[in-house]
Image (cartoon, rainbow, N blue to C red; front, side):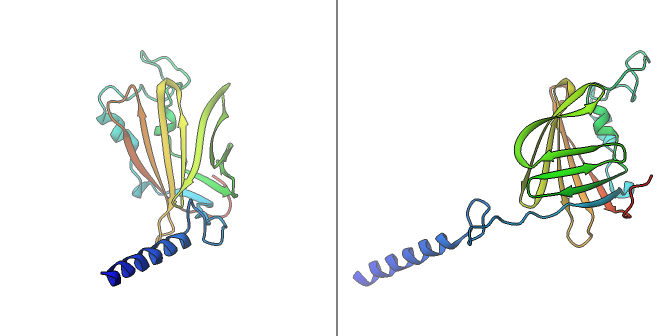
Length: 196
């Protein structure tokens, strides 16, 4: 009986010691932070491998807004619904990253985001600000933004191993939508320049 108890105690002590050597809370055993996978690079949209969000918008009854730049009744209007940001795919963009920020550089503007999970308001033009929330999880970059009309858009960025392509999973949800809309866009490594 004593042998069984001693063996059980030794097994528990070994498991406890081994657990103490495991990284905790995103840290390596030596106390340093785990390295974050990079999504940095210049990227060009591969339309053939990407989903078309218009297909999903059409499938959600009553969710599709009027055509871009038009109000119901055919009047031109600035987009305030946030759906234009969903429909319009960036053809090219670059990503630079540091330990605490990512910079998404489009041909006409740059978006600088903190990746420590804090919320920040970013000027997106036309006297508008959008709330962003960005963080890393499991080597993937997550960016959430609150759009007008109670619409929220989240994007998950990662580089597919083996292909080197950047995948961007976008999910859109809101009070006007009966369900979450999700679609994937795929980007190829682009040339070093960002010319159109």
